Amino acid sequence: MRSVLIRTLPLLLAAALLAACGREEPDTEQLGFYAFGTLVDLSLYPAGEYDVEAIGTAVQEELEILHTSWHAWEPGSLGRTNELLALQGEFSAPPSVLPLIEHGREMEALSDGLFNPALGKLVAAWGFHQDEPDGPPPDEATLADLLDDPPRMQDIERNGVRLRGTHPDLQLDFGGLAKGLAVERVLELLAERGVEAAIFNAGGDLMTLGRPSERPWRVGIRHPHGGVLGSIELDAGEALFTSGDYERGYEWEGERIHHVIDPRSGRPSQGIDSATVLHHDPALADAAATTLMIAGPDAWPEYARKMGIEQALVVLGDRIEATPALAERVQPGPDREQFVVRELP
Image 1 (cartoon, one colour):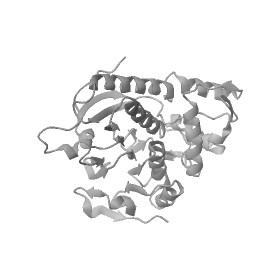
Image 2 (cartoon, one colour):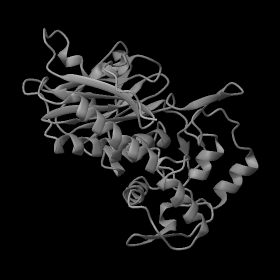
Image 3 (spheres, one colour):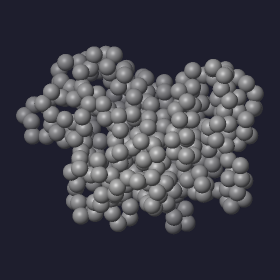
Image 4 (cartoon, helix red, strand yellow):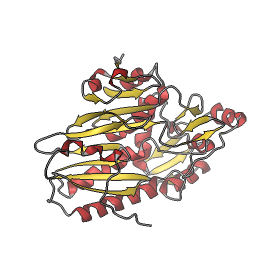
């Protein structure tokens, strides 16, 4: 069913418009709708220059195509790919899935395996292959079996468009990568339609195309415990992505079970409530935010360096740590006393 195009913006997602506050006439036009499993906001600059309804419809249709193709548990191209990979015979891959696989290989290598899209069975075992996850968590025997010889992206053999799975437990889930690629595609579509400048926000993960002539874009960074932890000015072509334990999860026997699974323990990551990454490559920013959460409080700077990330921050229980490059750009909110600069190794 096609989502209804709306002309309102949720409070938190309207952060992209902070810089326009105080102007008598807004210099952007905004539209919002539900797509790709989240609320989507699009701000177009300058106001009055575009067919906003036509652009919104085109973006919405593109996201619906990608969502259907890349969904981890609903019927689509990725689901069919997983079925064929499990048979461990050679097959022709759907073209829409090949970019995910190539990026997945790259991100797994950059992260030393902390980011591993081949662990779809592990994610499903925790109950996250459903729209409203509610448990139960896997038992110890199931976890031990899944961790005994876990699959990796290298267990996919590729010959052109032909693929073959070589591991019986291989199941792809690109939850920490697909949104980055989708955001990149939307900005390409906007550029093709002659949009001068825009900011596209998919559930708090966003990227800019160009910039207004007299100002930068200014956006808020969500605090995992509620509200906004600070704001930042973005230039053209910058992507800001966050991974947090608040995004998808459920309560089980008094414990919060969230969707970011550590491939080393087979359990939800611990120690970092959220991780935010700023980079010009949205796919890398998406995967790196997930990786830093998994890396944990001690090791996240090391993995930021491994992945080529200079601008990142993480929220811990009692403080907010940021790399020097990002710390100098963020304007802290009410929790400014909690900000700590953490050097990269």
